[in-house]
Length: 198
Length: 398
Image (cartoon, rainbow over all chains, first blue to last red; front, side, top):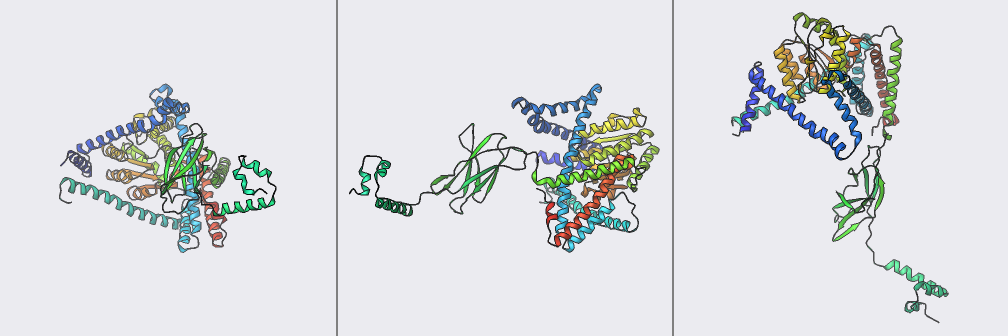
């Protein structure tokens, strides 16, 4: 048995020990995971973002336009100096503004128009009518300007039924995938470590 | 009379000789000879395959689309080589090899503003054939995607609705928004933590600041932080993303000031953990079991760690309110939390909690947009059945 398998087994059991209660083994594995992942992410940020998207374009290719996002990045680091903390708000505002600006047309395109079109195309079938009823009633549930009473309340109630069917289906589907993850770990412990199964 | 064919024996150039001939017979025989020549001459190797190069339309640049035209189905040709040259360096370089079944190739190894020429090489038996040179063509980015005019129209209509209702909301005395149980429970959750003398744990999940759910979460955090500052209840916020952490610190600081308790702001309580999904889950689980918060709020973007967090919170007996637009994770929150904000309820929450007329107006605008959407689906569906597909085609997205 190699050393990697022993370490992986030990750490797996440390994490599983949390099922009993919080304990020093879990704390060790938790802190190790957090520490290693932060170090890994830091190296990745340097190698995949800082160097190719700032240092190399500015210092090797002479593309000075990249200095502007570089300065905005430095503004974020100025939070360590209380006198200049306010500068980080400029970077934050840009991130939020650009994020919202990019998200709006992308959402209209990918989530709204394509789904509306698909619903229209299927309209002639029984499936299409069920889908339309699902859309209309679910949107009625998410209509916040009117109280859920009378016919509108009944429509919204139908929407909750559609939602619950969806949640039930996704719950079952996702639990199955989680069970398969557990099976993978068990196969590792019983196979690679204990050699009980092959 | 001199034979018309004697000109071949003359030393004078051919054209000079022709000019001297006036005999119509000679012209007739010459014509006959040319017809014979073109009819029975051996077939010279033809090269019908050629490239058509254009700047890739509706893109951000650095791309040229090549169409391979006139391809033969000759099984002897298995692949074509695409060669490229620039004005600055006229030596053609091999760019790619494409199979004989491909009809297009997108060259993404080009730079904007440079003139490129292309040619095609391929083997047919022992022969290497070369197509005519195509170009020059210049790659450029386009500012406007011509196939997304409909999206622009959608954005404009959405803006008109929302801005119109925001304007209306500012003038209106009161706006009705139906009660959402998960939001009404926030006051109870804060009160519970205050009475028990325990902290509140807040998490925005794995979302970064460009996610709409994270922005909504920050708005809710503002209302929650204002109340916790008022009651002097500790608020713990472990973060997955450093930018979210910075934003959350700013939001909480401002909320504490607004509540009249700037001393309630503790930047150390809003901290970065890690950008590893399960590292974050393990750390938040550890914080929960050690600090035993009275209330957990999971509001934002969540993935597979949703159930791990919610189950741990449930095991320590914390009162839990969750909300996300991650549809698959909603099911887990519903089973493991006391209250769950489903999808858009999360976005409505900030307006509901703050009663800010601007936000309430935008919620009204979104509501009526939903009515328009249902009407359009109905209209497009019925029109499609009747054979009028223009409405369906309008929603094509390139």
